[in-house]
Image 1 (cartoon, one colour):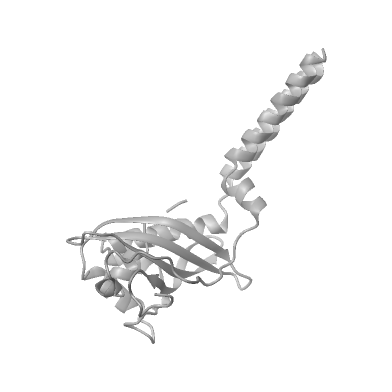
Image 2 (cartoon, one colour; image 1 turned 30 degrees about the vertical axis):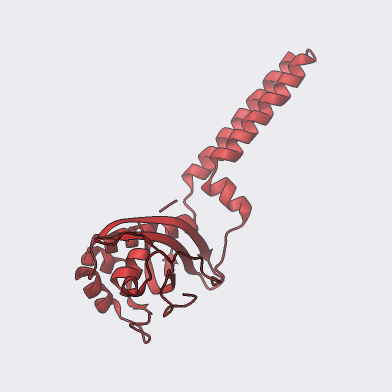
Length: 227
């Protein structure tokens, strides 16, 4: 995954970078809870290479032991079973895209569109009722205002990186993502880290659409939550 960057959103849409104290890079005191997928789902469906490799290795180890005991036929069956099971797990995991993976990919695409000041691409990912909440917009900017701010950036972005992504789908069927990002602004001599929250509407057969964007923390900016 992973991952485009939402620190760009904090800089361009929220103007929070203007309030940052460069060099004051600290971790936020607390982050809101977000739903996380079951560990088995992550390993089997999102990172199938490792369990597939483990099954294959187990099969080969068992085969080696059996071969050492003179049971060549059984050794061949064990090796084959490990390879088949491992291959099956890998194929299954590779064939399935989980809702969380869709959210991670959509978040990366959103951040990339904002970084490129691509208003139309950004608008295509927003629900008509999408809102952006910040110190500059406590009542929330609507979709048109978000696109206007994206299309007319206040700070040139030279690079952006997603460092960490958390979240999943909650019991209401809403995708909730937290993203830790690092953005570099032209003319500044230090990168700005930030955590942002993005809520998504996610349904089968259609791309995820943004419901809410909110900065949780921007380094050095005490005007956002946890700053």
